[in-house]
Length: 160
Image (cartoon, rainbow, N blue to C red; front, side):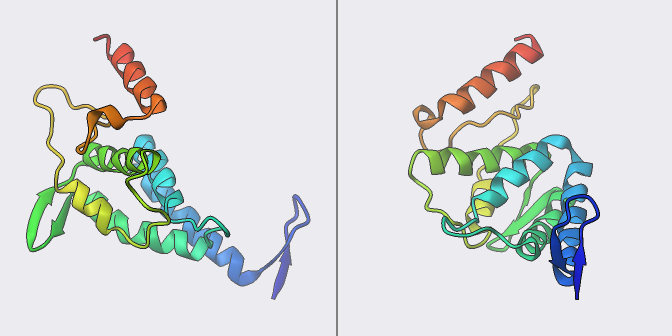
């Protein structure tokens, strides 16, 4: 069944609209946790997009649906062990993925969440001052100029 958008006139199937709704609800849930984690998840999901085509809304909704329970629980299980994973851990791990891709150490498109979960097992909270800016577990020198600028802005914002 085809439907027409009243605003732009685009024609879509009813299936596509349902998929959009599922993806919208998943993103709304992510942004309800925090704007930072919602923004980070959008960037992370983009790492799964093949170079030659777009992600379907159904796949976006499914990927977010796989992550959100663990994000909300603030813990993950990997290789039979449980690891604490508060929102700042997820943000840190996602920025690790982005920095690794920019440095050529991460091949995209990602096929699942195993890489992210493995990185989450390396997250350590910073005592007294929880940082939301990334530090690379592999090589600190490999951070991009963009991530360095974000880190500097965060420090200015905190007044340090």
